[in-house]
Image 1 (tube, protein in one colour):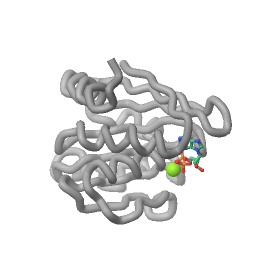
Image 2 (cartoon, rainbow, N blue to C red):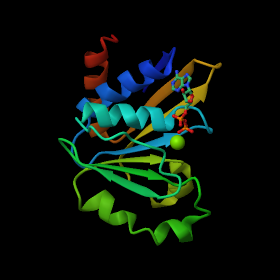
Image 3 (tube, helix red, strand yellow):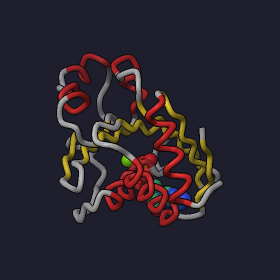
Image 4 (spheres, rainbow, N blue to C red):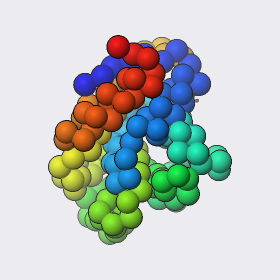
Length: 157
Ligand code: ADP
Ligand code: MG
């Protein structure tokens, strides 16, 4: 587990950038935190880390956005979806198991029972207007390595 505080949106993007450089093809990242906690901002950073030039927007209307970078990024936002049934109909398995990209899921708690056994969980908490507490928790050994690499890139020891 790894916890850090970011003091502004740029720092959250930078953390995301280092994360993007640490993830492997097939990685699944779940993002949990209230509206405005910085989930999309972090995904924008992941995109930068993957060399994606397009601006990553909040995909609240379109549920899945695909971006092509060094590794493809699939950005899912489940905010508008009600429950497991609606989520099952998305065809998300394809993104998890076949495409070999990086999958980032906002409001991932809504598909808790559908997640594969291994993923990286990121919890974002609002400390105040500009501070966010960001906690990374690995579920699976490969994500321990991701966190170790992220720490090295960020010079957190
Ligand atoms: P979410 O996707 O969780 O709803 P967003 O990333 O869309 O959140 O929005 C986060 C908002 O909080 C943005 O308006 C951003 O400018 C602001 N903000 C302030 N401080 C931070 C920070 N340290 N990290 C991320 N966002 C921050
Ligand atoms: Mg968002």
